[in-house]
Length: 87
Image 1 (cartoon, rainbow, N blue to C red):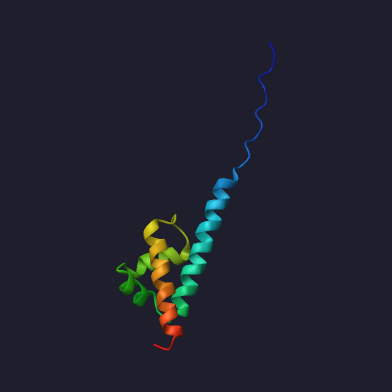
Image 2: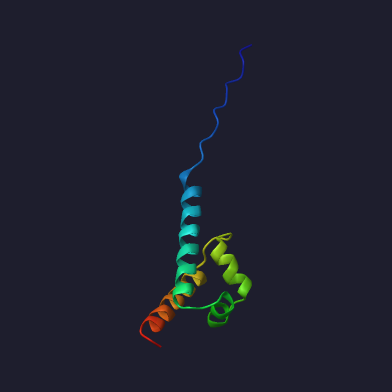
């Protein structure tokens, strides 16, 4: 009898690391936009119609990015432009 073939360790796919990078990038952009708009997490949550905990979670990057979050980032960027224009 011959020995069973040796299984090679599977390589991690780059899809997982790419997804994590996108989440980190979103989290950084979201926080930067909120701060540039001079909003606290609570104020941003009120503006976006979510809880402060949701904003905190998005900034921590612990969850995947959903379309609603991308929309929220757009709203914060618009708010930032209003602040920059001297609201």
